[in-house]
Image (cartoon, chains in turn cyan, purple):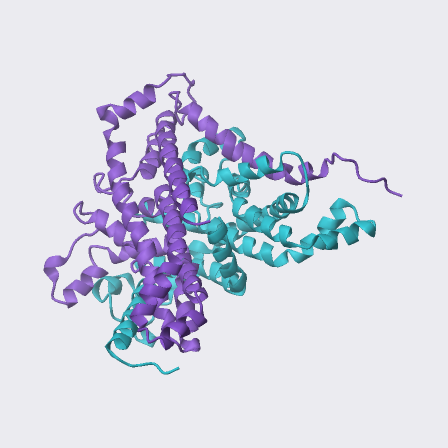
Length: 278
Length: 296
């Protein structure tokens, strides 16, 4: 098809390019700042350092600053993720494939959780964790994450399990498979793509959280998470070493970037599904 | 040989038990406990909890609680802007991108809008905070343009702080809302587009008469999502202005957080939380009702 190159054509292209440029501007400046000394950030904000003037020391300092927090974040995300996926697939399977009394009521309870605002739960959940004597441990993050991050996954995997053909499960039953075997041998392997979607979505939101860690991990820097130390640093008006801070941002973004890019297809599919169904 | 399955099976309940127990504790018990706490003078330090009835609510409706209600007006401004921004800019971009008929270029641009989504929220927020800085950032750019008179300490000036918070994240394209609109606009269909073009429709007419009516359903969904997101989120404010300067950018969720964990007044914070929950649930239900009557 031929495209007419009139005024509208050029205007729409210019707006589009401007939108891309403005979207990227903050991130380009982040990279720019991370390559300069703080003094240069202040004096020559828009200038790019010459290749031989790049101040790599920012990254060295930042690495020491964020290495342990990143490891902590990944440990917390990893443990939570495994448990979330186990529970999500079991619950989703029960809601999607099994018949039992009270099913609709239980499912409604899962859906209704999404209506309770996060802010309302901060104080009570803090109290629960404190009463369990878990403050300042990794479990103070892991347990609430497992409890709070499942809803989207349950809805998604329920829909998936429902879509599987009944004959497949009947055939398995005839072959003598138990209920549990139909789940582990048939349903679970088929649901891997769905679980990847759920996993990526959950990992991103857990890795990105800083409000909750800032409440429950208050003692010592050893167990703090990446987003938390970045947040604490900002809230405490902490360091004004902009070069080092932005370098830390970049280092801390990399794990998430690598995880998400490797599963991008599933992630995007999940976001779209979740938004439309949820 | 195994017996035929009995009518009642414990299996399904075992499958859902771990999830339901956790939700039971961390959502339902927590929610009711929050409502109960709002009727006490509970504080963060282990003091004895005294039941005070509706005292916290009385306080909230007295002049001492005025800040909470004032913060709702900030929230209203922020939320209205957030909803408009999360519909207008992503839809505009999806529309503009649709008319880039070169598949490769269109896909590249789409991926470019996905990339910033993968940066942690706190990182984007803090970069914006740097850009609003007194000494560099936007002020440097204004200086280069010879507009020194427009320079501000954006986030510490109570005249500009609210605007700075709202503008943070401009042009609001990168994110799931854009992806939803992008797939919506493209799903309206090549055929419909080609039919319209053959009938002599201009691009402008295609966008207005073909696309917009067909993506209205998504507009409703996204308005709901961004409404709820904007009402319950306070992370960006907590990491930038903290509600200040003064209380120029204070919103209810931020105030609850501060009253609970800075002042340590759990009881009073829970009363505010309960009211906020009622507000959010009411708005969500109204929105759902409107949506369901329009579609289906």
